[in-house]
Amino acid sequence: MNLEDYILSHIDDEGEQLSRLSRDAHVNLLRPRMLSGHLQGRILKMFVRMLQPKRILEIGAYTGYATLCLAEALPENGEIHTIERDDELEDFIRKQFDLSDFKSKIHLHIGDALEIIPQLEGNFDMAFIDADKRLYSKFYDLIFAKINTGGVILADNTLWNGKVLEESHSNDKQTMGIMDFNKKIKLDTRIEKVILPLRDGLTVIYKL
Ligand SMILES: C[S@@+](CC[C@H](N)C(=O)[O-])C[C@H]1O[C@@H](n2cnc3c(N)ncnc32)[C@H](O)[C@@H]1O
Image (cartoon, rainbow, N blue to C red; front, side, top):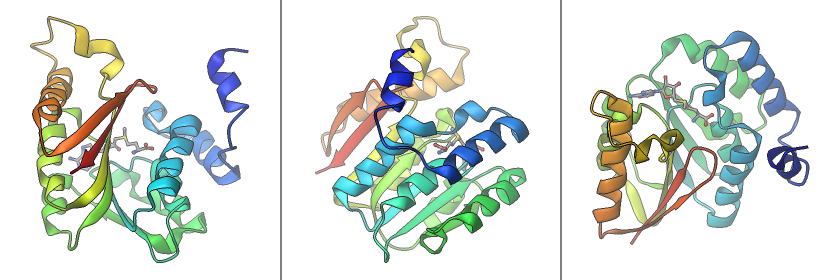
């Protein structure tokens, strides 16, 4: 048994629906490793349990795995808006949401987050940035005004498989996108921030 297996056998189960979703994604979709998975999914749920946000915004739904984890701990009157650019994923995602007990809390928007975020009404208490790595800084700027004081922004993949340490990255737009985002976050005095070395790096940002 490796450490990850040990961790997974000593934390909450992900539950039947999420483990079926994960299996379906591995059989039917390209790049199934993009979904948050058991450990990160339980951590996302725990953030919601502890922080008790009422409205959450997710950028990048993919299969809806993380959306379902975040929705699980939302109160009955809470809501999560998730945005996915790839319309070929819509049927898969809607099927997962339809099967879920938390369906009524979830609002799926198909389209480019850069266009959809400005159209969303109201503020959010939490956001999860997990889409195109080249656009993290733009997503952040668009989201920031909509996050309440005391709200939290989570950004996934901010260590980008260790590539943030590489000196020669000029042709790799995704690595550059993550590095620019990390610099921007470090310099932003309106927030507190830490990077958790979880999986591929998870930045936790608290809006002052
Ligand atoms: C890493 S996956 C999301 C995984 C999901 N959040 C989870 O944890 O299970 C990234 C997704 O973001 C989507 N995406 C990329 N750029 C986007 C954009 N500009 N607007 C909306 N979705 C985008 C991709 O199509 C992909 O499905």
